[in-house]
Image 1 (tube, rainbow, N blue to C red):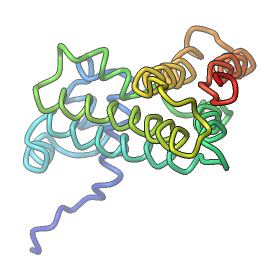
Image 2 (cartoon, rainbow, N blue to C red):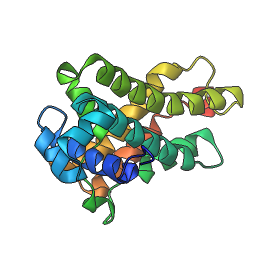
Image 3 (cartoon, rainbow, N blue to C red):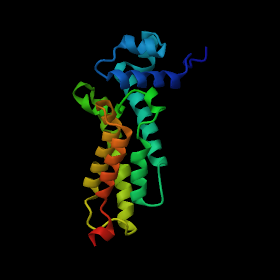
Image 4 (tube, helix red, strand yellow):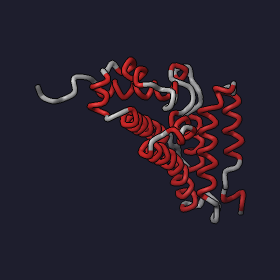
Length: 197
């Protein structure tokens, strides 16, 4: 015996992501997780410690996937890059096969139910999303595209909020067209150096 797990850990994590994304942390049961992952209870506890450990690992993988997608959606200016990130997450037929919304925002709504390490993982993931927007805004200030004195922190939160609306409002009935219009309105607020000058 090599001591290595006799299962595909990436597939286990992907299945756990799906459970937590669809049901939320509090509602997801160990039975749900063992059924979805194919792990026995003993294997789950041996590898991940408990439900909290599996949640942290699943959320960490999900967060890296989202951050890669955000980082890949770049254009030739800070403004165009922010717009590209927001449009990258508009609903598509392929996206309809995934659970609705965003696991990070769902987890943020469940902070009271999370163990301390789960809270830390959730908040760190959201902070890293916001930092992508902040970095683009800071780059815009440095190259003269964004007005000097712009409140970068406020605008980073603002565009993160728009991203969360794009991800979550389809559940409330917002169409792709409506979400695209929201993005257009959000980008009209861009702190353009020429506009403020």
